[in-house]
Length: 357
Image (cartoon, rainbow, N blue to C red):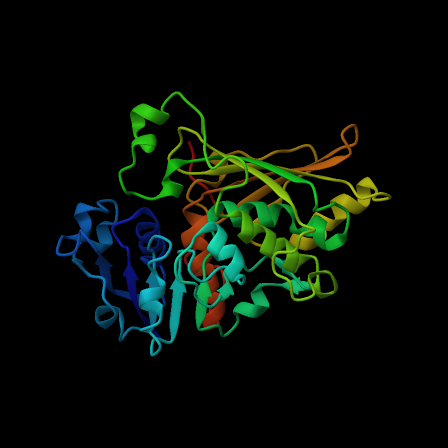
């Protein structure tokens, strides 16, 4: 069976990456691409690298144009997807790459986003540990999927094994991320201009204000199991100091996350927690002891590479994670989740191999 696909926000970075990956997917046909201010223009004017899709013209983003497809991807800024998802009830599968359907707590949404709150959908991070299993099981047969925030999924995948195994204390998590500006979208913003970021590293959303914080806490709460979560999505026991820094690379996230080691946890138990969590996973890989990843190694790949170190002097576990924010962080996660929902081979149209140099 071939599934018809519409992609909204197709002139942006996330939409363009969804299209790039879908273009090589044997089970889909990209029929419709939409935008807002760029509607009426050829897709190739905004995504000139997508040569196989150069025949497509951007249409207006309306429920009427998006309806009538088997799959709709929404690659819109936060707060804009909900107005369309409410009107797409007849579409068999809708995948939102924005934030509108990620959070289960309206209180968290109001505090970090504001505006209309929409019901949470199945979270699109298949490898994430959830209540003793994997989020993958919640994606099988799903009809509504919320793709993750790129920083949020990177940190959650970094620490979930330790939280689930009880070998780290989630009440004192510290994470610092080097991120590429493509994660902020394609719209013109002065602080993202080349003249502002080249030759500089610029922290932003400092002091617990970044919108991905409640998403991380929600994911780690789920990883800690039902006896701990007790139905509370954003528990007080999970505290995180989160500091992102824009660095002059177009793509990529390098997240360094640390947490205290719980009393009595041995080095062997700590490493086993991560090894067992990701054993057999195609796209989340733990590197050998003593190794740390680079963002260059995951460029263009749907791969999250993790390096684990045990700092006994500071009594902390250190996890360094590298992902391509536009692939595993967004579009790749969305398509991987789509494959699972439709019963297709999970790795279809996705690669673990990066591009070098």
